[in-house]
Length: 125
Image 1 (cartoon, rainbow, N blue to C red):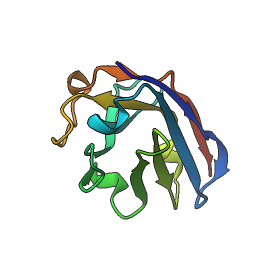
Image 2: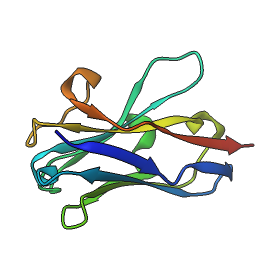
Image 3: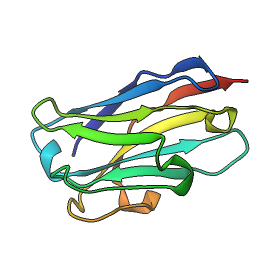
Image 4: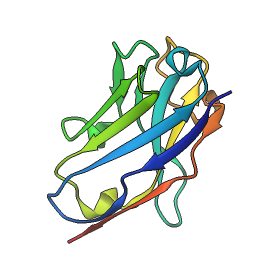
């Protein structure tokens, strides 16, 4: 089992950028698919992006396509979410998650077995 710690959240103006990082412990990081989810106040947890264990394939929610990029560095046991052209609608707590289904596009929270504590992203208008 991996343990995950997010960082990189903060306050940014609309149109700005942030890069979230997700540091994983354990030797098996490279076998896990990784995902990013977000949860805005009063709303459910929403899938944002996922990347397979190899890093060769990615998938995004429609609202993130063209603005967000998920990536990973298996040598550093770290996954990233680069977020550009942020809007107030992107304001949420962002969570990274790890799925043992390393070769799949995992988009449901139930596919993921480990979660970070979350990092707040606030976009001002």
